Length: 244
Image 1 (cartoon, rainbow, N blue to C red):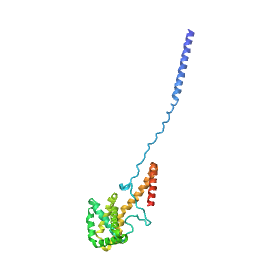
Image 2 (cartoon, rainbow, N blue to C red; image 1 turned 60 degrees about the vertical axis):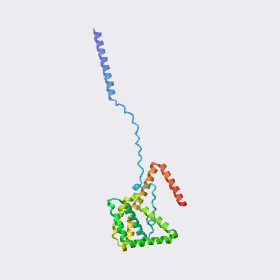
Image 3 (cartoon, rainbow, N blue to C red; image 1 turned 30 degrees about the vertical axis):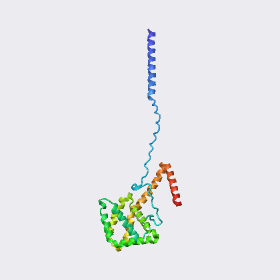
Image 4 (cartoon, rainbow, N blue to C red; image 1 turned 180 degrees about the vertical axis):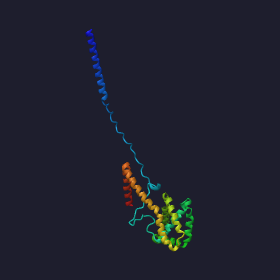
């Protein structure tokens, strides 16, 4: 009997020790921190190419900007004019405006132009005769053709369609003064009016040059092949121009 009881006590002690060991192992496992998951691979940022710059006023990408002269003015058809030619160029601008500017805000242009012509018939007739005499003197027998080409170029200049709205806005302001200016004030009026009518064009030229700089920077960063092609085209064009 005594030996049986001792065996039972011994077995209970073994069970207790086993329980303690298992509990200790479980506790140790619980205390251990689970391993961190492996770092995820970096996600590449999506490549975004901004749109290329666009021309101001929706003008053609082939627009040629007149160069600046030493006096700071653009080399256009309106340069190196005498007082009579200056007024004639203003008359041409107001004529284009009367024919081309549509909309209620420009309704007065036709009437203003007709009044301007009617109030200054003699002055304008003398201006036209003086211009024709100049062409006859400088061009000889071909003066009529030269004069006609000049007139065509002049009307084309004022008819530059991308600037129709700002040109018409400026023409309205000029036409209101044209109908109240007396003939003895036409010379001063012509000089001031020509500068005002050219303002939208000069602003456009500056904007277009800025567009060209922005486009060049965009090409260099996002389309280097286009940048090289553009450089080659400029070199070829310059060479042809200098050779002519």
